[in-house]
Length: 181
Image (cartoon, rainbow, N blue to C red):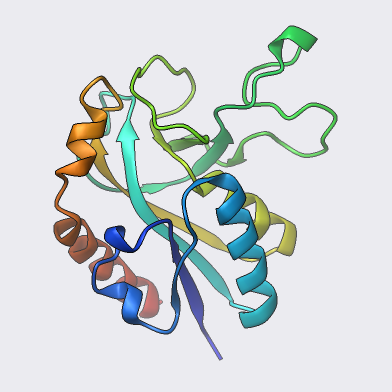
């Protein structure tokens, strides 16, 4: 049977979807996302994991609307003092970029207010962690982020006043498309 799970960090990001049995709130950050994704994959054995949430834009290409991320990096991994490139986890096998480089989401455990990041288009706090868990369990992963702010000095205020219902409506349209595949 075809089934998927939808993961979102906060109930506020999915004001109506959170009531559905296949939709789950992970909590903020990479650790919470990793724990919940792992637990739910082991319990539910989904054929697809979908992540939805808000993100800040650090690129002039993606300034608003719903985007589907194609690649994921850990933006707060920085062992450059040891000779490693940013976003690379030292001594780990596999690529540091999960997916492809068309629309890269940089995940980290901080809310970005200074958009000086290279190699990423948007920023969030959970997608890389979920993508990595899915890669480990060999489960397809798709990620949709709605740009809520410009990851600048106004990001906190912009996110706090963001219309989550509007973003959720566009995501629900995407879910309908995915279900019809």
